[in-house]
Amino acid sequence: MWKHLLLILILFCSFITSVEARVYLDINAPTFIQIPIVLPKWKAIEKTPPNLSTKVYEILANDFILSGFFRVIDHTKLPLPLREKEGIPDPLVLSEWASSGGEILAAGEVYLDPNGLQVKLKFHLVDLVEQKHLIGKQYEGYLQNLRPLIHRIADEVVLQLTGERGVHNTKLAYVVRQGVGKEIFIADFDGASIQQITQNQSINISPAWSPDGKKITFTSYLRRNPDLYLIDLNGRNLQRFSFQPGLNASPSWSPDGRRIAIMMSRDGKSEIGLIDASGANPKPLTKGPGNESSPRWSPDGQWIVFSSDRSGSPQIYVMASDGSNVRRLTYEGNYNVSPSWSPKGDRIAFCGRAGGQYHIFTIEVDGSGLRKLTFNAGHHESPCWSPDGRYIAFSSTRTGSPKVFIMNANGFNQRPLTSSKGGESSPAWSMRFE
View (cartoon, rainbow, N blue to C red):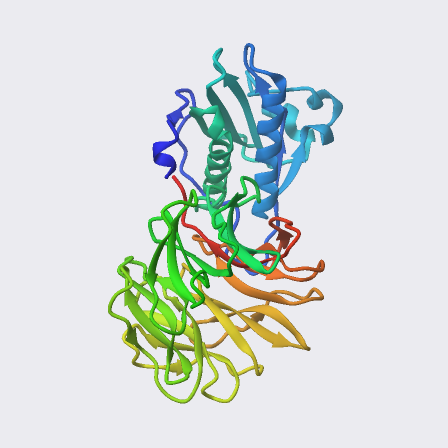
C-alpha cells in the first residue's frame, strides 16, 4: 500500500565504508542482554523546525524501546560534555563517546523543504566498542509519512545488529468492543495511527490479513449469520464472500493466498474446512464427534494446527492440509485453544488454562519444549506472531478490561499496544509494509 504513498530514496552515504555485517544480539536465545544504544540529539538542518527533530527523536527512541533489544541512553542521560551535542558528529571522535555508557551510537539529522512537504532523514550507526562505522543512510518522503520513514530507520538498525530486519513498519488488526457491538481496528506496531475499519454497529470478530496486506478478512453478524467478509484498509469495499448457513468463522489464509481455512458448521458441531479465496467450494477437513476450532496454517502451507475437544477436553492438534495425518500436540493441561504457528515454523503459540487463569504458552512442533510466557494476574488469550517470529501479540486482562499486549517471543518486554475504553481482543499481525 505504501509503495504508492511513499517516495522513498535510500542513499548510502559515500564516505561510509562497507563492513561485513555481524550479529551483535542473538534474538533467538531464551534470554539475552539488551544492547546499550546512545541517542544524541537529532539536528534540525537549516530552517527545519526544532520540534520536528524532537518528534523524530522521540518516535525513534520509542521504536528502540518497544523492540526489546535495546537499552536506550537518551541525550538527557549523557555526561554534560555530550549532552548538548546534536546531529552526526563531524569529525567523529570516538574516544569522546567512551563516557556515554553505550556500545552503539545512532545519530541523525532531519531536513524539511521550504514548502513543508518533503522531509529527509539521515542517520549514522557506529560501533563504539570496535570503533567503526556500521552504516549511513538517508530516507526521503512526504512529511505526512514521517512515521513510516522513522520506522524504516529502526528496522535498518535492528537488521544491522541482529541480522534480521525489524517489524516496526507492520500493523496489527484487533477487535474493540463498542456498546453491544464489536468493530475492527488497526494500529501501527507502536500503537499509533489507529484506524477504525468497520463501522456497522454489528459484531465483527476474528480479523485476518490477506497475504498481500491490502485487505482484512473477518467474521461478522451483520446479516445475523456469522459470515466472512473482506474489507479494504481504508474501510471501503466491504464484500461478503462466505455465507453458508451456520459458522463461517476464524479465517486463516494459506501462505499462497489461494485457500482459506475456516471453522464451519456440520451435523450440529464445528469442524475445520477449506474454501477458495473467492469463498467458493467449501470442503470439510475434519470429521468425528468432537468440535474443532481456530485453524492456522504452517508457514510452508503443508500443515494446519487447530483446537479440538475430540479427546474430551480442548487440545491442540496438527494435520496435513488435506485433513490427513492428524496428531495431538498438547497433553499437559485440560484446556488448550487458539493456536498460532510461528513464521519461522519451529514453534506454536496457544492459550492454555493453568491455575484457574488463561496463559500464553509456546511448544515445538513435535510437542516438546513447552514454555509458559505469561505470569501476571488476569487472563491472557489469542496469541499471534509477528511476521518475523520475534514477537507475540495477545489480549490480556491484567489491567482490568482486555487490552492488546505485545511481547518478545521469549516472554520478555510485555507492554500494552493501545488502550480503548471498551476492551480489545483477537489481535492479528500484518506482513511488513515496504
